[in-house]
Amino acid sequence: MSIVVKVVQWFTDPAHWSGSDGIPTRLVEHLQLSAESVLIGAVIALPIGIVLGHYGRFGNVAMNISNVGRAIPTFALLVLSFQIFGLGDTPIIISLTALAIPPMVTNSYVALREVDPDIKEAARGMGYRELAQIMRVELPLAVPLIMAGIRTSAVQVVATATLAALIAGGGFGRYIIDGLAQFDFTKMVAGAILVALLALATETGLAALERVLVPRGLRLLSAPAARRVAFKTA
Amino acid sequence: MNWKARSATLAAVLAFALTAVACGSSPSSGGGGTATPKGTITIGGFKFSEGSVLAELYGQALEHDGYSVQFKLNLGSREVVAPAIKSSQIDLYIGYAATDLEYWNNAAGEATGDVNATTSKLNGHLQSLNLEALKPSAAVDQNAFAMTKANATKYNATKLSDLASIGNQIVLGAGPECPTRPFCKPGLEQTYGIHFKDFKALDTDGPLTRAAFANNSIQLGLVFSSDADLNNLGLVVLQDDKHLEAADNVVPIVRTPVATAEVTKILNAVSAGLTTSELVQLNSQVELQHQDADSAAQAFLQQHNYFS
Image 1 (cartoon, each protein chain N blue to C red):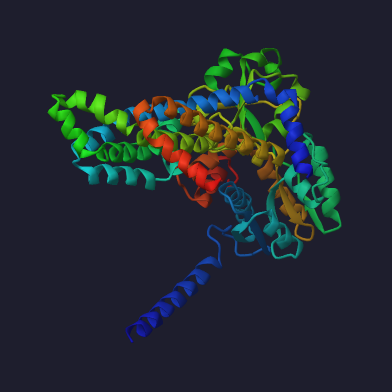
Image 2 (image 1 turned 60 degrees about the vertical axis):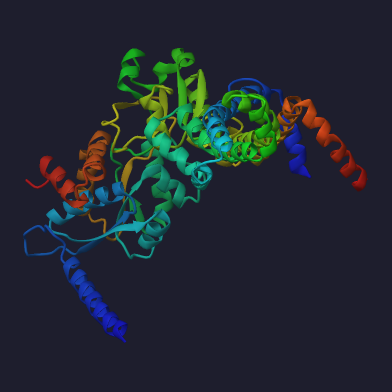
């Protein structure tokens, strides 16, 4: 009970909402680190997954590479890249990017792979060239799965960006690490709540983006099914 | 059953090795040369590099003057060493005034930046235990604030009070607990009136602090004053001219029955001859150049004519 009160007090203290250790500053730092990592990860991962998925070749290679990526602990990578690049954002972004890549490669590969072969053939038959076929037929159909990959990556990265504080980076992890060092458990809990909220916000925000990006045809296709499920459970 | 034979051999080898070690360690190296031993003094060392260096330094000085010295190096932390001297298992250890005071007074918070006051309070607690702290050395191993040489020149700073007027240009780096510790950021603000531009949470005298000095993301950082690598990193410790930090000067703590006038004289002579920068030098020889503590200490004593 008292810890709840303390945390509420922590959040209502105006001192925690300004300055270089204030929530707005830490939020911007956290978002910046996460966004940069996910963006760089997407630029690397999506083309690989899309191209491999389109041709349906080297699927094992893609999966294995991304699985190896998953097996490397982010913390180990963080410490290693800190040794190489020293203090700053670079080691943090490198390790978060490595975390962001695997789900995006896997999902975009599967997404393109799962496009109905009949549709591909029809597109070919109607005279679409390779690139046009990818851009105008396969990608729109693959959007839901690709977006799911991006969402998974982004949520993971936002949650893991707390590690940045271990090598003197910013973000909400600062509250957790500093709270631990200062035996200030209120601060720790507050930091954990902030990270959880931000991860949830990332999830819902990207879900909204996904709804916008999914072509209308697909939305109409899936809408009745969704309603049916909702009806059953109600 | 091959493994039985093998383990028997192993046991034999182990037994032999143990005997060899036991034989090897009984008469300590060096020695005064004179055949009349003045008695045996057992010296305990803390389980870190500087602990061995200091134990060797004081122990070899005693050895030189004819005492037979038993070295128990890397004995453990103060929680091990202090009970050992209380129960007469060791006769002497080389402690640090403020930290030892706070150990023996059960963390009553009596230690201050004044060495002599701290040592006399320490003696107050030791007396009833038949122990005493000798004269503290000028050499200290305590929290200190350092700057790179370039910044020290730029800001024309040699002591912490020089920073009061230019605090707004300086980022302080230390462990994340620094903003709540009286000897750290709050102390610098209250005692010296330094109001920093910002604080960067790093680690306590670890790799993060070193990296932050290297890319100038901090201008002032918390280190320990006798760190082996201060010179290599081009760091200068600013003088704590208003005595914010508790005085952790090197001080021998000895059992009173052992502390004869002669022993006291020898130990005080070593203390008097040792400075912090020489301690940094010794630490760097042992930690960075991987010399043995005993040979580094011996070379130091020879250089300073203890053996003449």
